[in-house]
Length: 91
Image (cartoon, rainbow, N blue to C red):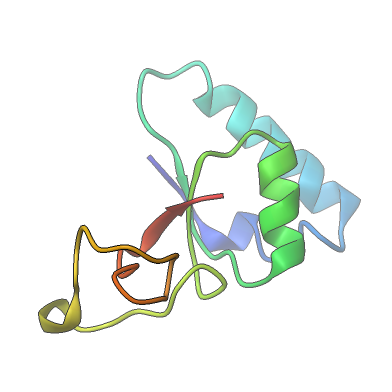
């Protein structure tokens, strides 16, 4: 299940948005599926998500999109670095 970036964009500035995301993640925590949070664009958002227990995320902070032909899977390096072309990353 993907959590839309609209629920993430202001979590580092808005207590109300953080509460809403916390509630959504609480509901999804009861479902037997992986959850991927989209739209992580800065370190502050990644840090908040980490404290909320989010394990998988996508976003420009973790790596820019690349054409499929440029993906190098299974290599070494962090997200966005050499071999780190996977667009989904642990936070």
